[in-house]
Image 1 (cartoon, rainbow, N blue to C red):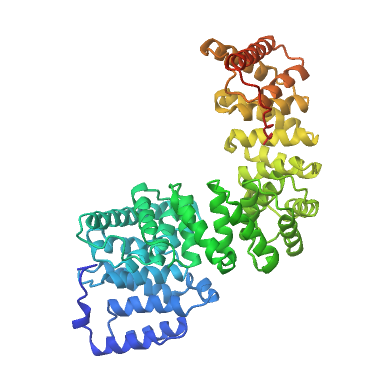
Image 2: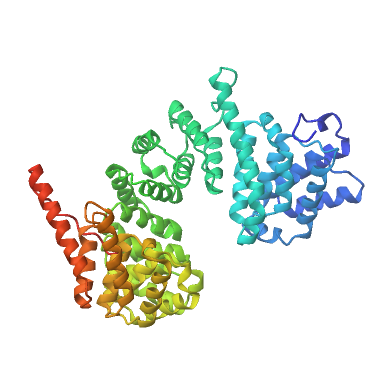
Length: 559
């Protein structure tokens, strides 16, 4: 039966054994195809071992150039057809190793064959996964996740999604079954998983969006039990990335990683591994000065940024800036590298994140922003930017005082062209804030944002987004009488429903922005001013009762 004990070993004919030896010795995909063609011509029936070895050998012997042509290769498609037919046959005798090797081979060759993976998923059904060795299980998970990444269009991903969900759910159930057996002293649990098998399994699950807490908890506990001594740098980086990406609690694992990295030194990490760690630790606000100082020192003294991929440069500065670590020397080095190589190779997200990173810590980077401006205006199709990226670009230029009228006009027009319904409230607020801060004319955009805000209702906006939007309207001399009226009505209702006057959810900067906007536009907001006065008196009274002096608050950024 499929996925059961191997039966082909006793039934393999001499010609099939000879064919397998020839395939295993091939040094290029074309040699594999030639071997199969010769066998078919001489009437040799390919068995499960032949098919699995062929797919595995194509992946092992192929180059990036070979892989680019495989999707259109008639020989490779014919091989996949043979695999599907054999897997669906009642006489199929594929064992776990062969199924895992076939999945791995197709994924490694970068061919997103949804049909083949659907049949592979059926073959590796939940009832059979107990016979999979850790390497076979982790390779299968890795393969499904890799093909998921290769699905370029939303339509293809939607087709593949139920197949992936089934495979991952079955794998998670098997992992938990093994862990439960170990608890009863009846099995090895996860202790027989090698570090790479743990990291590949976690990476695969996080890549496809799985976030089953019990599975991650079991994996984390197993890592803490054995330590990280046998984890190579890639395994460590992928493991941390998986926990952070899936939103799972890494807990003491991050402390363990910090200690291990400190003992080994960051020099043993490749640039991708290192920047993934920077990104992941920043994402969960793990601001270890020791780790980030070591990263900076290693890059400044021993690495060439010309060897970094664009995503790695973007992740590097994003991580440092997210934690408000303004390393001027490192930022300058990244700026110089980005300007020198040009921005053509940067994806929209990488461009937006890099701009945001420099702006977040107040690093001017004039050359970088001039280059970015030219890149966006003359080489980019803005439709490739998602709303958040457009908003972040505008915010970054405005934050650093780079008020390019042409850039703001172009981006503003693109926002109007695609419609504002696809923009989140923060993105709308940031866009008008950026226009107003730089003094760029945005009458049509302001009017459209006001209409969109009225359509959604004030409840859709956070206090910061609302106050920044109103401040921008006032700064840009945009009269939004209906919106101002609704805001005052909202505060009156809040006051009636709250013992604290309704303003306790607003920070000082946000309230200041609202009051300033009302005053600037001469909008009648007597009720709002009265509420603000009452709120301030209440705060002072409480401070006096508690006998505590006031502390100056940090001004919130108008992002």
